[in-house]
Image 1 (cartoon, rainbow, N blue to C red):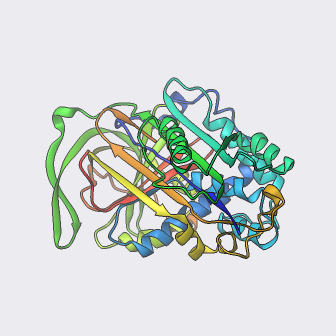
Image 2: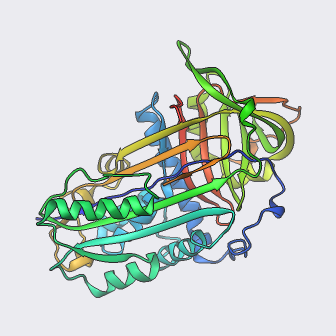
Length: 413
């Protein structure tokens, strides 16, 4: 059986903290021409959000004591690209796991939705660097089915780059150089080796660089305790700012949400579980709508303290997604005949790496019902992220979860 090597990458880094809840003052004028509710992009939003938190819940259950950070968007993009060449049960498993109900959305709408999303994410914006790139590295003598090649170019703006996989080191270096360039040097040497049996390598990158609307004052950053668990306390540089933020309290599951906006209509949604409520909050993520949270958040003057930190995660997607339902594509049962016409293709490797860093000024990065939520009734004067918390980078014009994760133990930055 020929090997279809699938490599996935995304990278992101949070930057300077911002004050500001008045979103009308910080619109991305290009991207904020609101997408019609009936557009393909709006049709894929629910599936993308569902997958983001289903995947998070899966990872949190397996790695309860570890930092988690990934780009659900990048995983969805890459496997949607792969699904263009998949057929039958192989394709059905991919779409179902990605959160798409094929009885209510068509393959064409999914492809067009990602096409529109790619356009929105790659809009020029002086306030924000946000870009997504796709590439297909192909064995130089292999011919793709024309429809597969054209659909990748049309819907995913994918480059097609021929390589000689018999020259293993040279091929590996070319792919790693592409990844390094697209992530502005933040991810190097992604591939440790590559098989000469490889036929294709599919790559996606997401690069995010943003600045807070108002930066933290570096002179207010001081070393403080971070309670990793009941028995572990570490020292972290804690940044502090007094400003007005959008804030919500979810009393039934026990957590506070704070919307810390970047310039350019993207926000970091910080979720601080009450003590002992981390797992309850993680389980509830699958059943609570981000739109509902957004609607019920209210501006409030608070003292916000968050660590200055970085986290990184490398995931074996072959292992993780097999457990979530994408099984056939990684086995001899795979039907990827829509790629080259060869029925004997399988995905041998799937890798995801993401990194995140937070500081005072800015930096860069290379993934229930309304009844559960209540308005915040009493003012909260201080919100301190001094125990494990969750973070989501949300692109508001398209309601896309760019990255999400959990900070269990902040690493130095």
